[in-house]
Image (tube, rainbow, N blue to C red; front, side, top):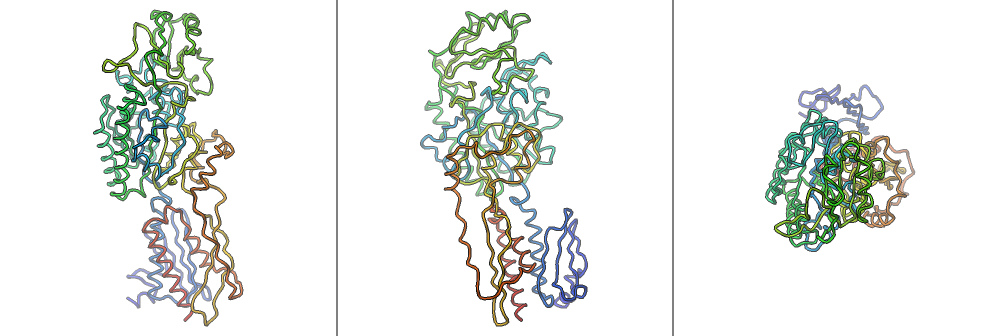
Length: 598
């Protein structure tokens, strides 16, 4: 075997020519063809040359050949290592009606552990109206309601003369309700990513002739057991590599908030139980060795406001059933007057109650990003926070188990109670960090970036989400002069310098911005974030003092090559393969040093 090494062969493979493995090609020119020059190894891929080693050695040795080829193999592995250039997997959990301040309540250890391990937005500003279906689709498409077409949980489509009634009619599964947007599972499917969804509204619908790989349909009777089972099955999907994306929808937080109010003991019980489940999720990620492979996002579609029976608006005296053909809502009202009745209905409602604001379609505020879709009715009405609207015919204030309901949503998205949550844990999130508030439309392209897929056109802006990413590795800088030993010196001293990167922004995430997205402007971010950011970042190690033992010389190519290949992201540096790779580099440098000194 030693003779084979000296003749430039390894197990019968001619190492002096080209070694081709699939699309990879390794070129090892012989020394006889490069008299007076260092031995050189070049690895090329379908994308071109990605690494060059140039080493100073009088001749190949068996150990040198072995170490050099091992480094090549490890380099190829690192190029395809998750967390470096390939994507991580993603688990997104949508907690319906989870208000932004629920995290801060006492006794929710699991949620607090989750926040410490990852990044949290101060709050999530959901799209208007602050209702479930519009925000389910905003989160999944990155579009406002006027662009994706979901304006309420119940709505009328004047083109198709049909109604969408939140689980009560088969027409809601017709694709035309959904085709104005590309939900994440469709974007992923087009780019060969597999997705599994559990109880997520709409995952069962064929959208643009595509569906997720698996969908367990939404049920109107949510349970804690279903939530636990969904998380367990999601872990199985990640472990066996059948899923790149898993989505889980949980409704009990919304149901308890509606029925008993956001400050009720019934809701507190659900929050504690879900907190324990989230804590268990963190443990499962470690047990299955997924903590460096899977990103987890917790988010919500809206908040919740306390309502009481003495704060209601009864429209029965002024709004007649015979004047409308469709009427939906209790806080956000969609009113479709019959032909020729629009002005009559509007005039009857506009000054009826001081806590109800009525708009003609063309007067709807632009900031709501609502009025330009054809499903928006001629008249909408919005109640003030904490108020409930009773509509004809003969409706009453709703009750549960004989008691008035205690919570509602759908109000102006500027209201504090309507704020939701966004927080993430995983290899692509900073730890124990807080960023400024986030728009719900920003989530979609951020999730696309985590999955390493190209987003469809969307309304999002990645200014804030980019701050959630781990700090990029320092950019390679020209090294200072390297000192070389004389013949009596027993070792080589190589001094390298690292400097802090000039930007906090991931170049990959920057590439996902739409052309119409607003330009990055850190001046628009809250000033308090700067202090939090500075305190959460570790300081760089002190710069080593340059040696004065020998005169300066130009840095050899082989030193530059090893320095460049040793520059990886923080995520890659934490992997066992990277540590093995570093050990091989150190050993190879030691052999090179020993050979030079012989």
